[in-house]
Image (cartoon, rainbow, N blue to C red):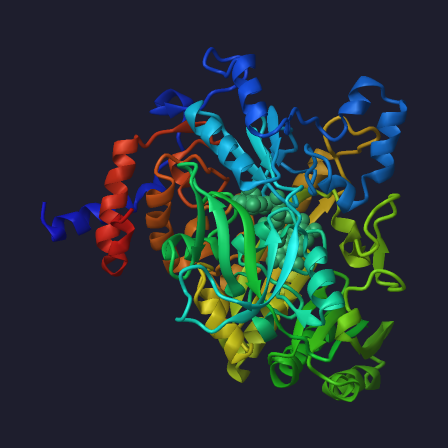
Length: 620
Ligand SMILES: Cc1cc2nc3c(=O)[nH]c(=O)nc-3n(C[C@H](O)[C@H](O)[C@H](O)COP(=O)(O)OP(=O)(O)OC[C@H]3O[C@@H](n4cnc5c(N)ncnc54)[C@H](O)[C@@H]3O)c2cc1C
């Protein structure tokens, strides 16, 4: 077969995403469930337990105690703690989201390896591969899509891998003499961002780019791409990964970086968690800490729809002129009852500079009291950056109240409502910065107004890198995230849910009909924006479970290259997650595949040829 024919075949192979999902009846490969004849015998599990120094456990559902004795002390203990994301993260059967309507519900794995070392992870990976088990990986448990949770699976739980160490002059392995040493931090896969903010910022006075929510896992977020408050200034979290230790499907413990397994390293930078291997530790670049971080806040309510249209238009023009730069990030919300809620943050500005930036907009709103009411004080302020993530004495933070909890563990008040949420619907869209040009602003304002008629529209400015610093843009370009992120000034999120509704949770009130109506409103709101940007990209970790074109939405033109990396390092799809790279070959639950290994090899060969510049994929 010549190269041209191969290219044609390659194109055919890439149609795979369009085929219907695999079904049990047409499966060429099935994984094993408890009760199946091939399910490992007790003696096999004992051998695994020995191999991981006894750290093999049988995880329970969060509310298992309530199923046994509804009014018992153990049940009350779970109820007391269920609003605490750190408590949930400490439970092997815990998920930070309690489920998603018609999508997934929380279910514990059959067994879990509570890993402490890379060798424990390798033992679990080999055991799962050899016994055809469904394997799942969990760090902080914050996946909205439910990808760190699967019934009848073997879980690799990284929570105990929580070591953090700082470097003054880090050089990735194999790069000695070719790259300049750089300050960095190495973090075990079970660490949360608050662990790094405490070590890097509060203790060492430096900055590391992580996520906004303090209890999110570091490994999960970096593989998502990952945005934090100041991503317009620094870039995504993935953009600053220098090296990772990862256990791949063959059980090998690899140290990967820009020199070693560079294709896999690139995929780990935004290619989606749970698809590549188990990351056991990561090293991230650290930066000089700006002297101050700041914020702008307040709520303006328009007295009529006409006035709200005007408010949105004015805010967009103001954003484009004064805030579309590396300094400003985070959020503004537009609500169905005509409110603009401002919750923005800034980096590298003095108190006076922050106030000056907002003065024209605040003055305009205050001067138009016939149209607008300030329902929550408008203001700006700054604090010493080193204290941004302090928990003690910080009125915006809720400390982990459990006895013995680290004093630096706490969560933002604003994230509290998300703990255990039962999602009705969720969607996100990157909007390109061209919409901020004067000739496009009216159409943008109209689409935002129309969307806000259905649901609250959240504008996350820090999750679009356009307008960011040159460093943020160039570092983020070298990741697997959809390149649309570089042209986007904002990620719009439209999402909602109800109170926690974990299986067996006492007093959980679920109104399925109302939840479906809510999901319809979310879909209607996002449709208004898709009319403006029909093929908008979407952020893999904050996105619609039901997005039919998830491959291009999450990764754009990078999907092809990611497929090739997947075929090289995980040809048999041991690492499956919903809407993860390669998932199109599997049933929704990841138990059945329709593509035989030979077909996957064929896919790999063709994709490799298509990607002429990546011939190294054939190596090793
Ligand atoms: C309340 C809340 C707030 C959030 N805030 C932000 C935010 O500010 N910025 C942002 O960008 N995102 C945010 N997210 C999304 C979040 O960053 C992603 O869902 C992220 O992947 C979560 O990582 P985790 O380890 O906590 O979750 P998990 O559910 O444990 O993992 C997420 C995915 O990564 C995989 N994974 C985890 N650890 C590993 C590992 N060691 N090796 C291989 N795969 C692994 C899992 O299998 C799963 O597929 C938020 C989510 C929630 C629920």
